[in-house]
Length: 88
Figure 1: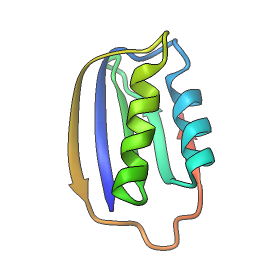
Figure 2: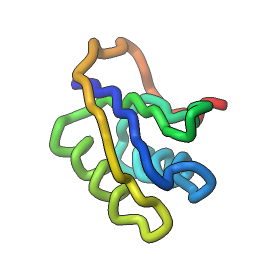
Figure 3: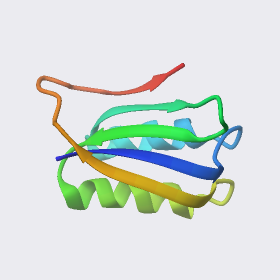
């Protein structure tokens, strides 16, 4: 499954993208994460549902990140995607 998340709150300048990439890599998830101009962060992640949920919990538990709102949408999977990237 693949999900697109939009995170709001204290999510830029606190290591959010690093945390997402490091954790996604360790869980063998694929996708990408990027900062948005409005101060939010967008992330697309692909893998098993329960593993994606572990990634989200890990991000939310970080002491520097404060997610105050989050939107999620199930989207089409990307075939042959093999890594999780940080987009700039």
